[in-house]
Length: 139
Image (cartoon, rainbow, N blue to C red; front, top):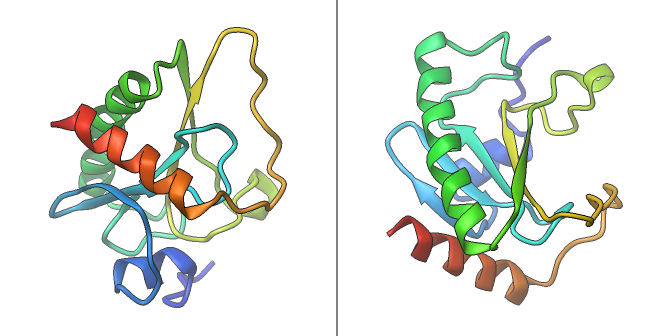
């Protein structure tokens, strides 16, 4: 499969689409999922093109998982979560919808089921508030 330079995450990286950024460094970007499965759902992506985990350079994966770990701790703190679900999908058959390597960080609470993927967008003010709380937890 070929990497599509016009996927939504590539457009976010180029600044062509907005995102509520939580964390950014030389190699990675973390931002709020606009269709969250839980309050505080964050995505982490590499800045280099990679369609799936199998396409990514191992050094890139190292940077991405380091960011996942850092941001996951902040998400858990900021959202007062009891735990976290970390997900990563590959190709359509594996559940991938956006074909740029990404990891989902989904905060979880005891007795609360993860919401289904409905395609419903969260209100921008909710995403902004959650992003601010997570950024504060990273500081």
